[in-house]
Image (cartoon, rainbow, N blue to C red; front, side):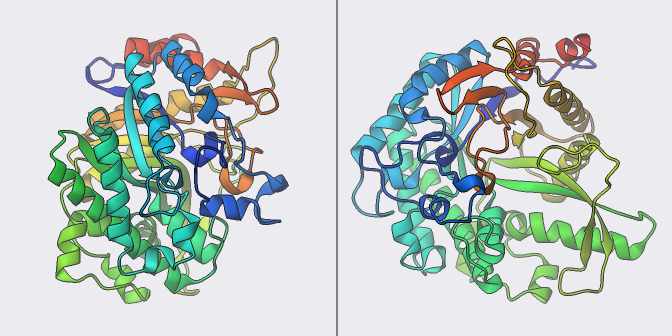
Length: 449
């Protein structure tokens, strides 16, 4: 591997999520999701935005796939809308929903793009939520039924599956903080939801293995780097370890080691796995999906259960999400994750930044995004050199889109979307990314400096 080259079989892609781009929320039999309910609740989403239209990908998918092909994407990570396939979350199947994803998958393959499907990216069927959702005893099996429907419908062509996207966010932000759907504020409930998500993950893996379809399956979690503010302080090192357990270990330790981290079990009212559930959840996965955006330094605090106080450093560059830009932390996180959980493969399933640049003469000169991608990809390259089994990278996001509680106020896309006309304009970052993919190397990006 050359100084700037990536491994020969490295997979380059871009990612999206169903509620963030599809629109068509009331078309062709789709059921209601918790995000439909949440976004239509006054005061929950910035500017009162909803995903009703989003990027209208449901109708424009052919054009979007053609654009992916133009940009040289080798893979496209999308999520399947559970309520579009099963409007009530269980029982009757909506064939028109199945047909849409069949058309999308076929279009991707016709353009030489590998489909990578996420089963759950937060748009939980409202009908299931109304019945206590992920906390019910059979919630995992209900998810398994939905997963099996997806495998049987699409698994002949989709060979890359992700069970959940960022379960920490869905459990914690949605059920303890209330900043995401369904907008609840109950710590014990959040822990029970996380438990249900893990059981659902195990059910999906079990169903996939039983079908023997020959692909890969894993889970995507959001990793955040928590460096001790004072590396020489044992207390700050302890705070760093505890914060990593809280965000990363909560879901990854049960999957890789069979149980929650000891710190969480001692500190929070964690649900208890039965021996059977431990075996279900810890079935071997094929890869670790790693989303990476943010970094915080932490110092020890004796206030409350969480003994890590996160510290911001104002003089460091921040994205428009308020997140610090510290490229080397991706290397540290990849190497740390490899050493702690030792996955067979790692894919960066999301990495990107929010910056808004104007359209000028049909071009978008998003300089900061180009710099961000170059520096974080260089960090990923270094992680491979240091032993991380990184096999691919998906930029977030292919399109500007509905950014959850921020609505349309944040733009993460490498493709600009005019939400009034639905016109797409590849940004300079997309053109740079195309050249990196073509070369399988950072050399074109470095040459453009």
